[in-house]
Each structure stands twice: as structure tokens, then as C-alpha cells.
Picture 1: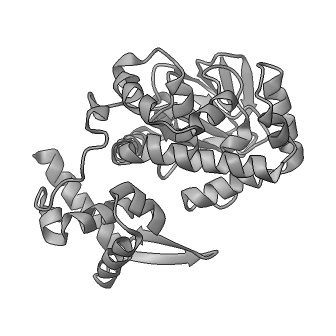
Picture 2 (picture 1 turned 90 degrees about the vertical axis):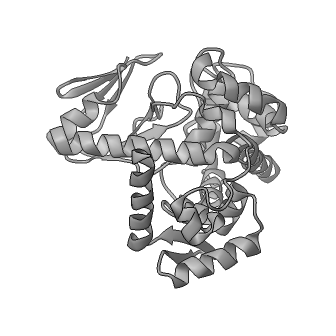
Length: 333
């Protein structure tokens, strides 16, 4: 059982994460991939992804066992998280003492491969190998499904927001699923070990996760910024369209208005994306993304923020309003 202890101040500082966290999705999906339960939800995805996975799975699986302790540094809670590359850079910048401590703790629960010792010492080659593995895994296992992931998490966030508006923080907490029970001032969560998390005024981030299974999870170190990662509802057959080509132009009114590639780019920009991420997601070239983003930016539907040498494309209020109109039309259809 996980028991999260709230103070009155903490109840005013609960928030829902604005979108998917790619590193949590990698962590949870690597763990889920090694499990055998959840066949109805993840069976088709497991069968689809296993023959396609590169060597990265062999590198990541020992660090992310399906049950028990996993190192917190693989899901950093601070640093630059604006893009996947920035998030990985933050992870790879973990201080050496923390790497050593967390990997030593993991080694106390299971036998680790030889390269883990070099990683624990912050060896540059070992860190570079880990970074390449994360990028390769994300490209092969997550990118083909990222539209479904993003859409499902946006729907879950809308649901949590409604709970908060209708019933306040207590309704938000009690609506997290059958494995979560609010017994003021403690939130009790079904958990494989006994753990207490005392918020002490820091608040709590609720992070929905597409691949979290079967119960919520959190960081092992209670001194880190508190987060509760929780499963979401999955549509039946969500993995059946994996690897399918993007919808052809004219498939929707928004696609007919903008052209399907620009419509898809606008959707990707709803929560922000880099040129590289958009190109991978839509399977188009980087110059094509830049050209289409120029048109969307000139129309006032997106804006581009440049930070630390990176360009992040974000939908403007007008762009989000256009997407919201399209979402409502789809719901009525």
C-alpha cells in the first residue's frame, strides 16, 4: 500500500500534468512489455512491437524490471523537459553520486549486466549508449502509437478537469480509479510495497500514463518532487492501427481546410513539439515540417519558441480553438 499524506496546503497544490511524459511512457512501456497480464489492453501492442524492437530493449529491460524497484533518475522531475531530446539530456546529466546510489540499490534486488557498473560511475560511453537506446526505443515502440497516446491522455486530462470543477480536489483524487481511495488526509493507493509519501506542502502532480499498468506508481525517493503516475482508460483495439499510414487529405473538415499534413502538425503542436519530433511522428522530412510550420505560423495558428538552440512549435489560442471545434465535430459524428 502507498499512503500519500496531505496537508491542507497540499490540497490546493494538486495539479494534472499538461500532457504525456515521454520518459514515463518509456519506463512504463518497457515494464509492461515484460509482463504477461493485461492481454486485452496490451496484447496486440506486445505482439506488434516485439519483433520490431532494436537492441535498445536489451539495454533498458535490466534497468526497468516489470516489478519492484526501478531507478528514479530514468524519469527526472526537473530540468529542461520541453522536448524529448531535452528530457533525455536531463536524464543523462544525472549527478554521478545519484547514479551510483540508485543503480547500487537496483543491483541489490537483481543481477545487472556488466555495463551497469560503468553507467553507475557516469562513464561517458555508457551514458551515450543509454541515450541512443532511449531514442531508438522511442522511435520504434512509441512514435507509431503517439497519436493514440496523446489523444487518450488529452481525454483523460479533460475528465480530471471536469472532476475538479464539479467536486473539487477530493473528487479529483477519488476519480483516479478503483486502486485509489481517499481517506482524508491520506490517499491510499494499491501498491506492491508499503511506502509513505509525505507531501509537506509540496503538492502533487497527477501524471496520466498510457502504458502504466496495472496500478499507479510513484518515485521511490520521497524527497523528489511528488508525482503520482496513474493508468488511463484504453479504447478497444487501439493498437490495431499501429504503423498505418497517415489519413489522406480530405478525411476530415480540418484536413480539407489545411491539408492533412498541416492539420496533423497543428494537432502535434497542441502540447508543443520540435521539428525532429514532428518529422518522426508524421514520417515526413525536416524541411517539409519547417515549410508547413511556416504556413501555420503565418496564419496565426502556431508560434515557434527558440530556447537553447532548439525550436519548439506550439499551437496558439486560435490554433487550439480550431482543434477544439474539430474535436467537437468528431464527437458528434
